[in-house]
Length: 398
Ligand SMILES: *Cc1c(COP(=O)(O)O)cnc(C)c1O
Image (cartoon, rainbow, N blue to C red; front, side, top):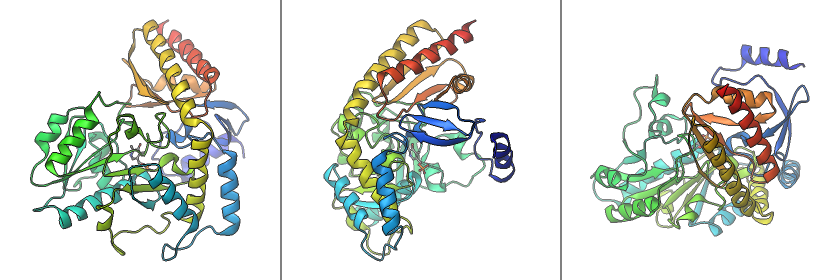
């Protein structure tokens, strides 16, 4: 079917929850994707930080093929081989002692919030259930996670929201200290805010939060759905400051493109989940976790973290050069290969111009260009994107 027909059918039959760009992507390899007309694009969106290993990484493809022939799904009533392997790997590589598997970032965050409440009922004094989250956060689209998401635009039309949430400014540990009261059970945040505009923690912020949480006896939850799995140049973003949470959520890139979510939990808290307390039919199923094992091993074995640091630093430097040349660039920020360029104008038209030139980039918050290339991206590919961006910027000045 030709692309015009496909897009027409999509408009007719697929719910309009996305304003889509007019291309149909049908194939991907590494940092590149192709549309149904055979046009090639350099992909600096990577499925929104899902394809950290690049598209169709051979080891992930092989793992999916092998597992699909063996066993695609069985119930969690039984032990599942690749699930056990992925849980072991994640616990060995992180602060965590146990993993709960589900299918998405929102579901992982739901699990974290449920466990925080349950733990509080069992282990904390009084009636504590409230969770403090940060302005400009993003935690998902279910009723609870969208309530945790402290951005009004996501709430519109869905009242009444879930009770039990309180919002404070990001990067302000004193605001968190003041907000914690006799109802608080947890503080939840992204170590780097992705959707909210690539906002980085200032030096010492995460450590200060850890101290406040310890002092007040409340849990600290990191949402690493977007920044985990190597995106910042470390396997997990919390490693940069060496500040460990009590729980952490993962999803997006965890299985190299196959839907998955995980909640990683510290000992002493994990025990508050007992058989029957929480569940997910597909959670940790053989296919998804086999892909997860292959993806995690590939990130670690193929030097992707080092490449992410090296090329990420280079990319950040090149974006800073652009900032010097164009006064409408307000700020450039990020870590590893989650980089943002804040403009003093709408970024939407820039994204469209880039697509015409064969480059996929993202814009969030209306005016922050967000770059999330696969971790295997090269300096040459970064140069191509930066040069195209400069060309597009020049047409804006004329
Ligand atoms: C994408 C994202 C989510 C939601 O993940 P879904 O898989 O879309 O439910 C949650 N938190 C963060 C930080 C995200 O970037």
